[in-house]
Length: 606
Image (cartoon, rainbow, N blue to C red; front, side, top):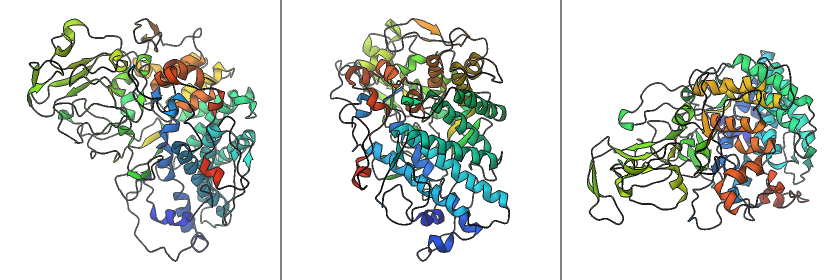
């Protein structure tokens, strides 16, 4: 039976703790003699079935390899002029990006598993009797939203895909790819029906609400309006509809005053560890994927590995240098940074480091000694060059891109006076490590959460999939594409609402005019005006505001900018890339081709 077909979903429904506001753990019971047909016959059984549709969202968002690398902002590994080999196929789009890629099959399987569960919930809901019919309508609408979400990512990623809409109760190898335009029609049907029945506020925090459906409607209409390859059935009217839905979200979900309160709070120096309350439930969050601290029920599949990790581990997928001299070993102080996804060297230069609070939150520019060190051999070449550190002393410092250190401001290994490593952004691509302390890649710690166990996972902070800041940018993009009648007026006004939160009103932030040229210090304002607002300006602002939030590849594909911007700003793609139009969709997984009869057709070029 193909993996996108539902398989023993009732077991998941009974064993998985949803983590949507309820603090009680499920009582363990033997379910070996329970079947779907005997259990999902009552309101209680159906409630569990709908709950089982939520946990797969954790697996969904951990498929970041198809959302972040291979874009203008992120690369699957560090790049420098001494880099050996061809790089990751996710960045170079070379012959190694094939139907056998584990990242491709992992995303496909997760999405179709979710389709399987939601199909069962939608179909079986018709036969279930509820004491309160409105509650039943809400639960069926939750399933419709989650099915629409799954198909939205499927059709963006692969184009024409199979579209089963009923529960599968027997093995079936027949697979038919459905035209993308037809899939978009179904997505909009599900979302429109769901929006009408969903409540404004969920009974359990974390369930789908009316606002979540409105947000997804805005994004789906915006995407269809671009009408990729003339295949989505989109028209100019879709941009107007996208604006209408975005305005509804904006009216209901107020921006929080400070960007950094949207993400885990912490101290830059772990010696002064933040111990206050976290804030993953606020007015700006439209829909978030829930996490909890229970290892049994909070596990997610690591893409392409077949293993599972407990908790949200977005904090660990980005690079960092916390294990330098003076570290306390593998502790929660800085936690673990695996460097699976690196910001491109260009990405830092989209920000004004002095004025933009998002830069200050997203990047850690200093590492402190967590234990004392005496007479450490600092240099690879000078045996007499030694340093000592007290607890709390600076060990490494990364300069902002627009204020590189020179002369005495450099470290002693480079002829300066500082007894710690001082690194400019251009060192990131030299491939030269001057001293034992020099580590050229600053920590990207937007999602880093204090106090969690050292390791890949264990984060409990909810992942905000939709927030109203993005709704402002959706509205701005729709207006640039011709929509009129927005509640705020022109596109620049929507754009600047997001910018003002980060830099302050009437502030003129400056980014690099040529982010791809690390030697250039020429700058340009990124405040929007009626004269300069454009799709590229909006994508730049989306880069700053939504940095790392599971959206970049899809935004670039939607706007027709994937090839242009990735070749310009991704250093791997620029040096060794082979990206062409065929890469605007991913290859159909070989596992799906092998288990279908007749074999499902492959996308062109793979």
